[in-house]
Image 1 (cartoon, rainbow, N blue to C red):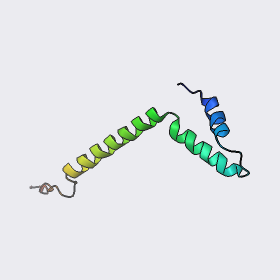
Image 2: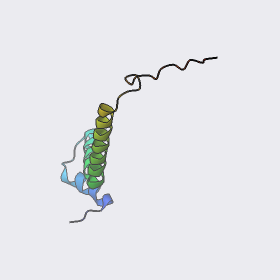
Image 3: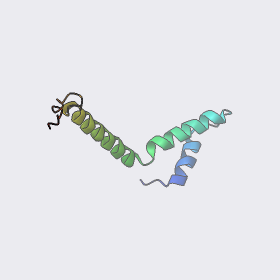
Image 4: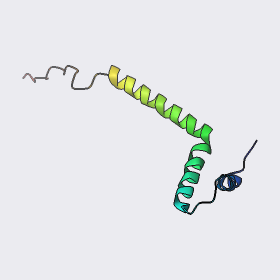
Length: 79
């Protein structure tokens, strides 16, 4: 059941009853196309972004900030 991209819009328009409100029809068509086309790539992007966010969050929580580390003793010059 493969669907070509050009046919998707025509099928969506033919499924809906004709309406005078063309703006609502266009928005619902765009919403359907944005969510249904390339869903595998979108799902992978969301998963990768979530993993990256988790790794950064975990790294920030375990790494002490530079202000928390004790500073070395000041070097005094002896003559």
